[in-house]
Amino acid sequence: MTHTPAAEAEARTRTIAFAVYPGITPLDLVGPLQVCAALADLVPGYRTVVVGERIEPMRTDTPLALVPSHTFAEVPDPDVFIVPGGLTPTLTAMADETLLAHLRRTAGRARIVGSVCTGSLLLAAAGVLEGRRATSHWMYRDLLARFGATPVAERWVEDGPFVTAAGVSSGIDMALQLVSRIAGEEVARQIQLFIEYDPEPPFGPIDWAAAGAPAHADFASAVLAEALADHPELLTRLTA
Amino acid sequence: MTHTPAAEAEARTRTIAFAVYPGITPLDLVGPLQVCAALADLVPGYRTVVVGERIEPMRTDTPLALVPSHTFAEVPDPDVFIVPGGLTPTLTAMADETLLAHLRRTAGRARIVGSVCTGSLLLAAAGVLEGRRATSHWMYRDLLARFGATPVAERWVEDGPFVTAAGVSSGIDMALQLVSRIAGEEVARQIQLFIEYDPEPPFGPIDWAAAGAPAHADFASAVLAEALADHPELLTRLTA
Image: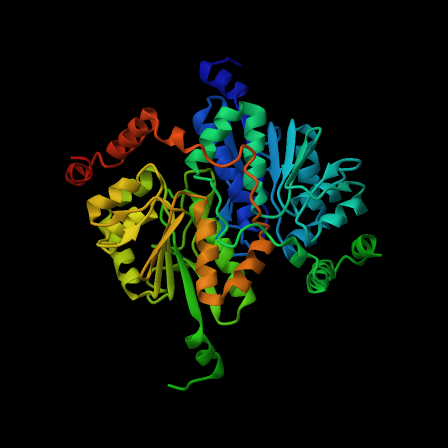
């Protein structure tokens, strides 16, 4: 086996891999992907990939379908591995042993493991967040405790190799923090400027009092029960 | 021709259509798409679609490929029509008469026409922003004037049926504003809560002084020249 310069450069390349699976909330993936793809453009030695079970269109919770660039098998050793979430399909995936095995194996070899939204529930269901502080979408954050993690109500939570983000849009903030950790604050600021991330929510910050409404708890429970209708043991473990 | 209840319901359905074309910045599309898909989930009578020339995977400026749900021809009359942007491929698309014809025709029939980032340059190149106040990614905003629009440095700009957003991530703010316009502030706030849009950029707001750096102007000019290398007349019109 010869070692060409290209092969050596490839060997030194650090890979940031985003998981994709059917039914995700695409903003969970695309927010941090856009940030990390800019890192790969700005700093030599990084590449970003999107990995899935197969390279084929996957539905999302919007009318858009997403196609990964690589299979899980093709990228067994990413440096950074990030798992997006979603609503019903992600909650159902907590019982998908094939997907959990991919996540467990890849997360076990990565230097940094991240999640967005309910993606942290998949990492938790895979058993890798035991004893860790972590966060998730506010609606399902407390479920983390059922898998032995400690739920924390912050925009993103770092604990050892893990960085978990809150719901959906929080993946952008988390990814900027992640970039600053691996390439420095200056690069993170450049990316923030490029993606013009200078947020102005038209009605100001979230009114967190609304998140405590009983209607939301009922909705969250109903969706969870529907998602795990075929997995009564897991549903009992998460709700009893 | 009989009118079934289902056909009547379909006829009353208001469609929010997002354009997709090869090479876009996917966050331009997915940010506002996620907001509008939630509107369609929350409020009866709305549907969201993603329209492209063909229903096939399209590359983006990340490793992710996107597949639209419908063709342009299948959705000739959306109520709301939104055009995302990108870097080199979008700048090149300013000379793509086939795409511009789709945008011109659809924009001419929609009640509300929106854009994110350099998507406004495509609307401008299609001739529909003449005499309008509009915005775009900060790096290329001034080009709007070359097409007869008035560039405005705001997060989003509303002028008659047009709502144009600034760069990349600004599409989320613009879409929340758009939802409040068509379905009320309460629905927009519910969506903001669901996508947990309570931004915490880790290094605070953008340092706009950095955006004025000569290096950025040189970069913007070089990318534009490369994008329009095969279209010297348009390049001259935009830079002379």
